[in-house]
Structure formats: structure tokens, C-alpha cells
Length: 315
Length: 250
Image (spheres, rainbow over the protein chains, first blue to last red):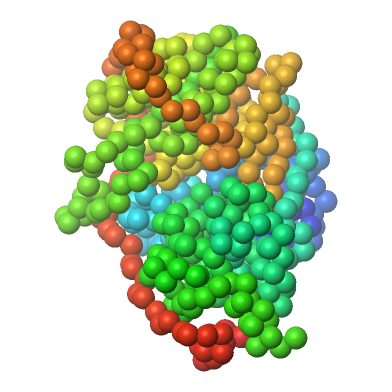
């Protein structure tokens, strides 16, 4: 029977929800055991959270000063060492997982499957290519370990477990390079829900017109408890920071409710939202392509619709 | 520094509407416009700007594919690269194989910097740069939106999910580019003429002695499930009612 290792994603304080989504994908592989490894420094809370996910056999906690920032050059050799004991190594297909896992796979002499969206068999998966405009079946030959990143928009988070999995502190005797140094992280989005895992997302596009005008998007989002996203046009115009971009070249998301204001619906944006539960589009232009994929469409001026919506939702 | 190596992949042009072949054996590429992968174009632009600032002597472009790929290398030369290398393979290679080939060329050319796109817009793998950095045992700075070089180091701003991350790497290093790093220049006609005289070396992959077997088998290409068109509402009240009907409002 096979063994799975999941690389936890976290910010040093909280476990990222993407980890539980990878655990969901792991459940489909019917393995003998599934472990999560947490790399970090003084991050016992993160390990506790990981131990509370359904289907997890144990959590490995690899704490050392060098692991404080998630640098691929530091983590990959440790993952490659751990991989000796596993048949599968999985990570979320977030910027964290995309950065670190290919490096670990290459160190282990293996290829990698990116963006697993469905498990067809023990070694057979579906993944999107051409920005989701085609889906391909990929198969890893016998005798190779499976390294894979899991497309978080394709999986719901695994539920909480009835009992906590055991946590084991581990020390890996791996020499780490000194050629890469973390300096700082500038976060753009503040205290709002995380765009990639939020249940509701409100987005604005070029039609919002300015950074100033984006305030009404933020205020509606706060009323709905939603994260805020933006189209590439809005980001390129400098209305909002890049980490809010939804689409093929930004974040691919799957909230229950997605509301797009003043977004025309370029292919690359639609690629980022097509797994959303319900898409609502508000746009002045009745011919905007976003109406072709929207579940509910409203032709109108966002500067009139948003205040009315605010009122209808109760002040 | 002496040399920057830039890797260029030939892909279906980003404006082409992708169609899956009816027999599921792949996507239609016959008679379809092919271009340099847009992220790789950004990589080349960055290398050229570094050279034009006087921080590098030579920019080499590298591709791995069949003889058709010379077109994209010529475009790279017309943009301003000094010379080109085509490692000839009958089929495009997967990321691990590409990383092994690039590693072999790195051994020969000894560049201080290798710049690649963060992903190719055909297979969307986002792996090759990271794998090259692993095999080369050198730093990686992926998804770069700003690169500053100083004293044998690169300070790179990376576009990550949580915002912008700043890291510092010692050279030699691998950098992969994100969209906002720069806007690639347009190629002018005189440059296309000049590019015809620049050296383009063709090297059979067998001469490198690296394993280029695919790491996974691909089959059954299919079109994604389409989203069906929904309803149109005429005002905010109808919109709120429709959302309540679906249980989407508290």
C-alpha cells in the first residue's frame, strides 16, 4: 500500500486552507497512510491545525531557524530527503507549491504533475492545459514517485477529524544552501478573507475607473464578508495591487458566489472563475462576454447598482 | 557579468482559440500561428535590458525542439540576442527533460544568469526553471516582477499569493519571469534582416548525452465542460431575489 506526504502551506501562524484541499485530493488515492509535513520555525499551532484534518495519519513538524521563510532552495532538499519514504508527494498549486515542489521533484530525479484536478487512478490524473481550454489525462509510469501540485479550485477542503493525529518533531540531517535570503513580504490585502479560499468574492474591473472608486467594491465585499478580486485590466491600470488579480495569470478561484462589476470577461479572466458556484455579472455593456458564463446577469451601471444592492442587503 | 542565457519555447500564439482534435490525440496545431511563449519573451526583454545597461556582455537564446523552432530563435535574435542555440529534438520535451538539456548547455556556456518564463502557455507546467535550479544546485527566484543586480547578487521581487516577496540570491542564479516584469519591445524590420546574419547553432540532443524521456504519458485530450448561459435580471431587487432563491445570502 502506498504512502502520501503533503507539504503544508502556512504563514508561520495559520495553516493555509489549501492544505486541507490537498488532503481531499489525497483521500481519493486510497493510500495506506497520509502524513503532512510542516516546515517552519516555532509553528506548533500550524501543526495542531494540520493534525485536525480528516484522513491524516500523522503530522511531521520540521522546525529550524532556516525554515522560517518558505524558500524553495531551503525546503526542497528537505522534502527530497523525506520523499525517500513516500510514494506520493503533494503540495497545493499555489505560488508556494509551484515554487518548491518542482525543485524537490528534480532533486529526487522525478518529474512532476502540475495542477491535478481529478484522480482517475493510482497513477492517472486529469490536469488543465492551455489556460484550461483543454484537459489532458496524464499517467506516471510504474517505478516513479508521484510528485504533484493540486489545483485548489478543484477540491473542497477536507473536513475536521474526530480525533487529532499525532504530531512528531523531526530533524532532517540535510545540508542547506546559504545562497538565498528572504528579505520581506509586502502584503496587499490586509484583513479581508483570503481571495483563493474565500466563499464569496466581489471583483472589479476596468469599469470601476480608479483606485478611489474601488472603495465601493471593498465596502460591498465587507458587507458580504467577501474577499476582493480584480481583473488584469484593473491591476494593470494601477487601481489595486497585483495579488488581487483573478484569472489565468493571477489567481484561479472557486468561491460559492462570485460577483463581477465592470469586468468585460476576457478569456484569461474567465479561466480564473469558471469553477465558481454562482457567477453574477453586472456590466453596462449588454454584449460583454462575461454574460455568456454568468448564472445571473444584470445590465446596468455599477455606480447605481452597488448603492442599491447595499440598501437591499440592509444597512 | 559575461553571459545571460534565455530559454525560448515555441507555443501556439496566445491569440489563437485552442481546439482539441476530435480523436483526443492533442490540440490542433497544424496551420496555427506559433510564437515565442509570452513569458519567455519577457525573459529575453529583461536580459536585453541588463545588457543594454552595461551589466552583461552577451545574451544567448536557447530552444529545444525541431527545425521549425529556428523561427522563434530568429525572432529572439531580431529582438537583440547575440546568438542562438537550437538543441534538436523531434518532439517538444517535458519540463524535467528540458531542465536536463538546459543544465548541459549551462555547463558548456557558464552563464551567470539564466532567465526563463515562469510557465509555457501550452502545457502550463511552471516547472522548468525550478528544476534547472535544482539540477544546477543554484538559487531560484521565480515569478519575478522586478530584478536588481548588484555586487554579484540579484534582488528579486516575486509575485506570490500573499503579495510581493523580496528575496536576494547569489549569482549564478535562475530567474523566472512574471507578467509585470517588463513589456517586451517590438521587432523592427532592419533588425529582422540583421538577425539573419547572427549565429544560430544546431545541436542534436544526442550529443549532450542527457535523458529526455518524458516523465509522464499524456493521452485523451478533451475540451473542458462548458458553463451554460444563465438568466438575466432587470434590476437589483430581482438580483437579490435570485441570490436568495439559491441560498447565497445569509
